[in-house]
Each structure stands twice: as structure tokens, then as C-alpha cells.
Length: 277
Image (tube, rainbow, N blue to C red):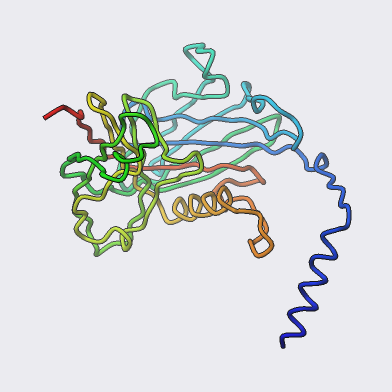
């Protein structure tokens, strides 16, 4: 058996000496759709872009002439229009003409049409557990060797998670109203079995300084949404090593080969300010 392993290893390293030319420009451009419907006002949007070739740099092309419609399982329709406020940073974003909020238990259907091609998705709005309270404390390790100067306070979250249902969650952490990640490749998501019934002081992955305002947003996810974020996390954090699985696009609820995801969530929001004692 030892000889088999040695021969295999030799073949692998021999093959690595060959020059391989990758044809990276032949993949057809794909539509990327990112949509969100929640139970919170102002959180509804759909973003439509297009992928670019591997060697092409700059911002991904924004699609500004799509037809976007969201409908619920009661037949209520919500028409979206492109960048109604003409904000220069909102190219590719579509917002509902008439503002609305999602309702727990409802299923929402997305239809996007681009150049005669139609893309569809659906997702259900599940309830989200309530964040009972937030606290903060000094993280001693971070205080000794901070990643950012002065930012060594972590926020602790307390909540109760109903274990009689299968629930999935996405978390977002904000510092002074700006979304913050500890590492650029981080995605903070979990199932309820990992969290447990008593969420007793789970620490935030990001840190704060005195005077900062902290906000935690907890999103419910469908099982499909959980799978999407799990796939995305594995794709982003794939080290490309010999024994890593080949990269693959995240499984999605979008049809017709579109990339991205249409997410429908309840959102619970809680915040505090890091004040000196």
C-alpha cells in the first residue's frame, strides 16, 4: 500500500510540472439576481447584474432595463422600478413602486425579465426568534492584540430559540450603521441545532470601540436559503488545494441558469451603544 501512495504522489508532482493553458474567456455571461423581501419597511429590493470574464476588471455590469415583479401566494402583485431616486450608487437596484412589507407564512414569487429571457424564484417567509437583549464586554485577547485600534469590545446576544421547529438564521453586524465583517470572506449563518434553545451571551464576531453604536440583525432563512449560504461560504473559503472539492456555484432558487438568490426573511433588529463605565 505504501508503494501505491508513493507512486501516486510522484505522478501528481510530475503532472504539476506541465504547463496548462486555461481558456477562461469562453464561459457565457450569466445573469446575477439578488433579491430580498422582509417584514421590515425599506428592506425590499432586487439587484440585477451580469457576470464578466475572468480577466475583466472593474464593476460588474448593472442591468437597468429589466422588468421586475414580486407576487405573493394571495395574488398581490408588487411592481419594481429601477433606481427610482436616481442615486449614483444604486444602478442595477430595483425598488417597489408601492412600498410593502412581507407577512409571516406567505410565499413570495419573483419574476425578472431581461432581453426576453425570464428568470423566476420563490421563497417562504418564516418567523424569526426575538433577540431578548444585547450586552457588551471587553474581549481580553483582542484588547492585548487588537485587529483595529481601540476596537476590543464584543457584543453578547441573548435569546430563546424554539426547538420544536427546524429553523435557520442569517446574522448581520453593524458598527455605526455600516455592515462589518471580521474577515472579508465571512458569512454568519446557523441552524437552530447549533445555536441551542438558550442563546446565552453568544459573542459577536466583530469588535467595537467606546462610543460606537452596535446593531445586530437576525434574519430567518428557509432551508433553501440555508443551503445557498452554506454553499457560498464553502465556495468563498475553498483554498484551491489538491484535496479541496472543485468549486461550484451555490445552489439557488433561481431558474434559467441565473446566479444569486431570492431571499424572503423575517428580521429582528436590536442595538446598543458602547458607553464608558
